[in-house]
Length: 277
Image 1: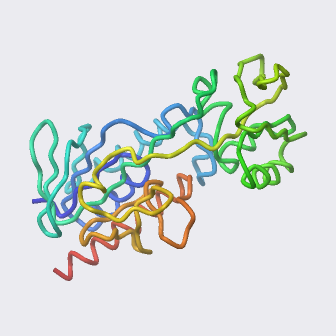
Image 2: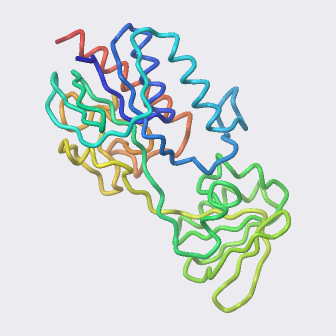
């Protein structure tokens, strides 16, 4: 039996495995190979790694984990989870593994508005987070296709960065066309506007059903409810990364640094819990 099984090989899961490995806890990390930032070519706002390819970040992290004898990493999708604290079962096509604790770090998937051309530029010139992607459009026109008051907040964030910020109602955005060095935003009335990049607000969904299978509490945002230590409402089950947040927050932070921190906190809490068993 493993001390902990970590499900998810993004920044939160990788950091959780590293923290557990450094405490010589026997840990299995299972990675489906599906990542929210799979289309992103350069990760930003991460100290010492600003601009690095996310795939390279994951490869570097795996190389570091390989130095720890108690950490096992498998490129393997989980099919189902069950059990209670002290005796969880995690089933894959290969078989079933057992663990005393679980850390869910499966992340979310983004449902994009059904606008032609949007998906092709997602993670490149179409993004969600100004902190992660805003600077790359410095001195240029930036588009914002977000509804309600959130559009005004994003516009104010981007105002010091771009030469101009153009707000387009999501309902009025008919298509997004790739042009030299930017995008052409086509409205439903046929008018077109040039922009270097476009910020939207996709709808996030849990990438995996495991929190629901275990009976974890879900917040109105769709995120898994956790406390300050990453513990879900189910004893022995922790969650980290953009799939989870505390009830005091309106939603999770979409940030590599925040995901890494959440993974470390959850793993440290697991260690503290294990020594009390």
